[in-house]
Image (cartoon, rainbow, N blue to C red):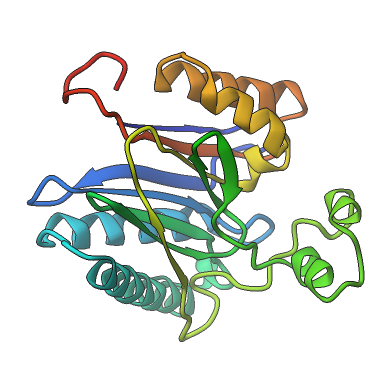
Length: 251
């Protein structure tokens, strides 16, 4: 049902992205993508710390039967991850100013709970319609929301990559929490902006609806992003709600 992939890209000297797909004691899944803040020291440290924290907390968690408890867990886990990253930054000169985006998803039997900070995204495909679940915490998105620029202008804005909210840069922070239905044949994509900046929604829809296995889809998406410049790290999680029995090769 899930496939995680990260790639350094073609320009950056190292990969500041992180992420993964993890199981808890009840065999429920948590997927995470984190993009260490470019231009800041130790962005890779920040993204690694938040992913490791969420993975460890998730490993110890019990089964979530409803969206409220899942959302509360995400909020609490991300807030404590923020404390971990913030304290590390304050105590280590080489890490001062580091931060990271994060987008994380808990998969229930009939719902997903999504938490995010920054401009890493969650997309959901339902009945052939692709929607962006998260709303970027970014300068250009604020300009779009206030009517100062159009969505088309935002795509080419010189400050497109400036984010207005990041994990680890402030002592206290709250993630956005969103809940959506999760049903057979639904598909989900988490990604850093190294992917979303290179592939538009119509192309994403085409990639997600083809019949290739998840691994092939993920590798193709990364290849396309790199072919179009690969200036940033590229990280994604693909998830399918398979109606077939567990173990089917298509899942």
